[in-house]
Length: 296
Image (cartoon, rainbow, N blue to C red; front, side, top):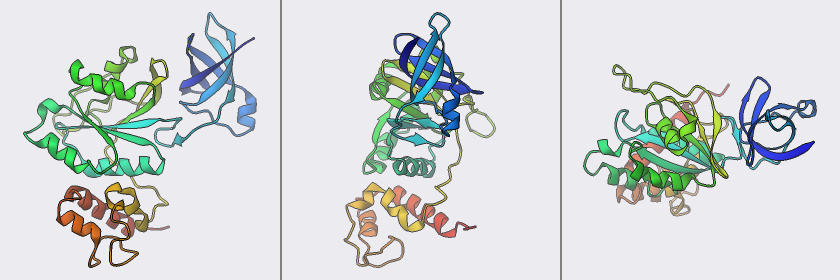
């Protein structure tokens, strides 16, 4: 029987769609040995399969190959990068929510690309302002109009040869970006609720969409809130802000958390404009949240 390597792009009810490069999606059942060994296949897993019927594209999932990484939300493996999408307007960008996402991905060692969509609705100077806020975050940034093919070409280049998770609030244009990269994905796009100015959540499950060779996109359900990791301590938060690292060891106190301590190099950098005040304000809010979190 024919053996092949592929990538899981969908899993529902014990059945898995495995994309094989020269064949397309193959419907597979996982062998019992995987369940016996406590192995739960995830979308994004590179796998070894047996093709039982090439014409009908039916096979068995024999082996899950070594994972480079895996995320919990969404449950996806072997992620090369995450593209977090926010809109310039409708809905307004929620920067504290963006910062939470950066922290979550940084702790998973996943590269983040920040994508601001709907640039046609940006006010004068707004793009430059957002760029300055996140210039020290270590993230690649792009500003696009998802319905304009010319601006979307840079997004396509960022996605090429990578497995990318698309994430962000509802209504910011994730599905439009997906449709541009892979029209066959046929993602439903929804307008904003006039009443609450939030996007209608049009993505209800996570799956990988094949774009081109070695290029996959995972569109995820939109979210309006994110919680920091349960095991995260307030003392660990500063390390999640790359802008703060260059001032490490320069504060008066070696255990400085950059709040009320005198002679704090980070606070001085905020005052001089070297660190964006918006990022520091976000840090303060998240630090208070971690300090006040109930420990059960």
